[in-house]
Length: 171
Image (tube, rainbow, N blue to C red; front, side, top):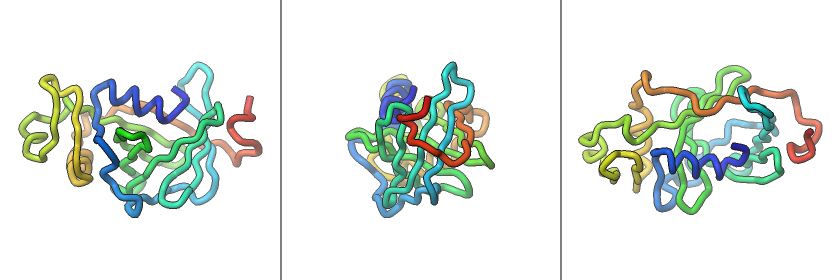
């Protein structure tokens, strides 16, 4: 999937976390890319390249087709961020940077017990396929306590040398 918005939609449909509006304020954002940074997908048939740039508190992400989306990277711990999409109904996932690799993780609603979700005030369907949060603290507490056996990467990207041309112009 090339577009981050399409990616967030696919994850929302796959049983992840979303909200009826942004739960993190822009002031919480800290885009980790100080200069325009190009990453290429790993393990894709035709790997696409994504350009990450700081745009205020958000990261501006340009996909291979030149489509732009904004993502709020909220620092969680060293080299880990909670990412909030810019859709009307944002999705949430984790990103980790290690050396030249950027890895995306998608905690799934069913990986958390119904009792824990209820204690935190998270609403969910009977199968725990879809969780809706109303506060940033809910996402923070769940994602910080996400058990490691469930941590499977849902996307991986490798750093590309400085971009000579925008992603939409790349072959």
